[in-house]
Image (cartoon, rainbow, N blue to C red; front, side, top):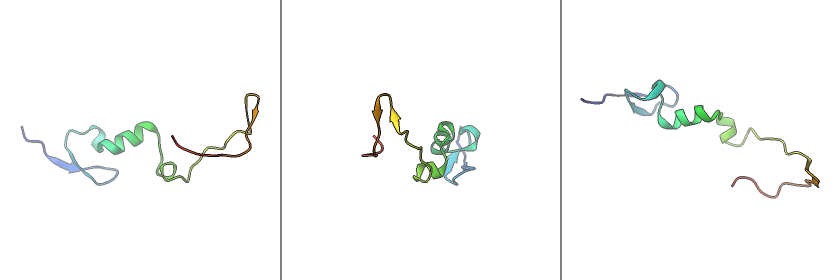
Length: 65
């Protein structure tokens, strides 16, 4: 049986007709993780707590991991 291509509803990438929700794998992953494009691009950040247990956090020395 031939697999027909169609376009991802979110990003416009060519996908197979049987892809879930009509989305490509990247858009399905992004949606399932609840990420917004702003968060991925660094515009949406979390506020750092000033204290963590008995420690006072003075500044951020790195991000990611």
